[in-house]
Length: 240
Image (cartoon, rainbow, N blue to C red; front, side, top):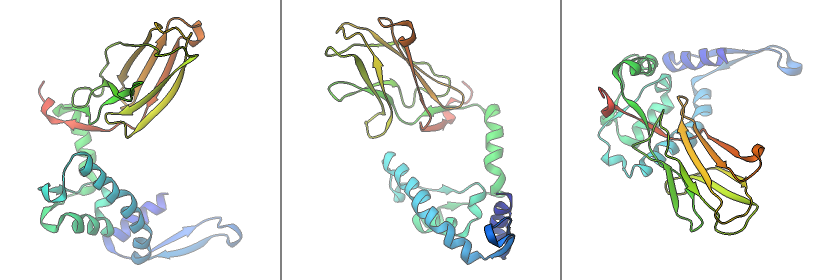
């Protein structure tokens, strides 16, 4: 992987071939393959098309924005040096909107280092909720309000019919993204109280706990971890 990184940087910055040596290449032993810029671009173009552009379009759709409504696009990080990446972003937004800072490989790390000093907070960009029996969604963590370090209130749920378990489905605010599902053991009483709490740790993972006091001790607490939440960095929180 280190040699691949060297090849990517050299081809991106200089456009030269890179002699990549593959060791223990099966029956062929050690083999050196010259990686040209054309070969490299053929490898990365499908990745950019299927991942980067799809992610950008998805983000604009969820933010209810179009490319014409965006005033500027700041490109940062080492991948900014990839010509197919730069070409794809330029073709999408237009060259006049593109801003490329100096030392693109270091600005992301510099920003991360400054964050503890300038303040700000990571906030959820979407609600986290539980699907109810009528298919409405009850939010337990709220976008633009909750974020890293947040703890929810204690919410109480009950069954709508006699059942040996309760089905919990955790989704985003509109139900299009299902984060997790879990069946919680119950006694089957309609007045059974299922208590739910949630908090977001420093690793941006939501820890959801479901407590049922009516079942055996080993079944009382069930836990769900959600790793794929989306956040934004709230600069308005600076100085608070």
